[in-house]
Image 1 (cartoon, rainbow, N blue to C red):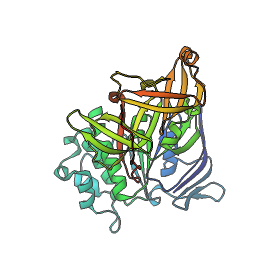
Image 2 (cartoon, rainbow, N blue to C red; image 1 turned 90 degrees about the horizontal axis):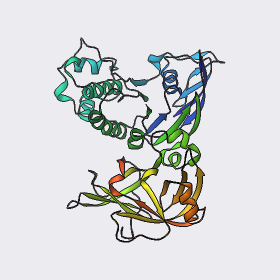
Image 3 (cartoon, rainbow, N blue to C red; image 1 turned 30 degrees about the vertical axis):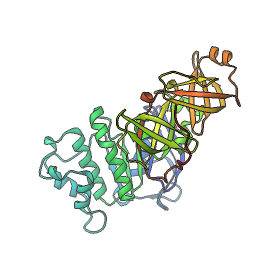
Image 4 (cartoon, rainbow, N blue to C red; image 1 turned 120 degrees about the horizontal axis):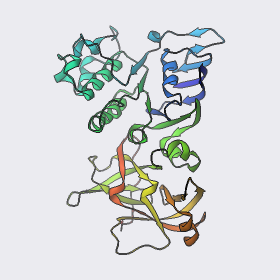
Length: 370
């Protein structure tokens, strides 16, 4: 879907990035401020011109410095959603949505309005909209431009937590319903865990790694890039059942199951959850008579010293878990690769679930959770 190999130099900053993105749903660009995320998407959109390199979208070259190719932004079929929406204040929502829509082809106004649930807003002006409503309209306008690719540059940065929770499900649903690939820029890992399929890590203008979200978040060597705001694993599981009386949901994976606070997804849905390393404790024997609901037996795959008085431990318990313990705990428990341990995870500590479109995880013969 996307091939990027380009260099762009600013005073005090240099983007020298190479990345190839396949036909995936939502690809997230993640990194700290100044890592080059916005520069990269601006080059994709044609809003910035690289010093040299090549950029191809959907098999078509849009920039090649050696061949003298630089396709104008309006001919790249890219929809761009900015942080602040950038709606025209003098136009109604309907007129904003239709601005730039081609005369034929693409999604219909009716379908986009239905997908975004914005029918009651059509006759309003942007000044009468909330922040979340403005962003939905901005997304709708980008979709109606008939894009082959949708770029979203931190579209939730100006919203509070409540509005973010309102918009994130819409982004995922829209991508699934329309099939339009999305490149999503964020510096908040929880957003990425909730909606992204693939992840590209940037730091100081370079691509450090790229691949499926679950794979990159289980790599201890990438903790400096992925763990700035609380390291942890992202895990794909299936909703097995709901315990309404106790407000819990049972999530299954091939080797077992875990309990989490009740989620809205129906049984059979595939979701992703995030388990923070700080919320995983380790034991050599299965504990008894404790409040922790999730106790998973596994094998230590890797240990790696982290900053300060802690050690990162990767545990394979049918799902890959990341724990952080002290060097003293490593010494007392004699933790080493290959050792059998029990991972303890409080149900109330698990969060970050979101629907997935992948095939359901096999959930037969799951042992009961203690």
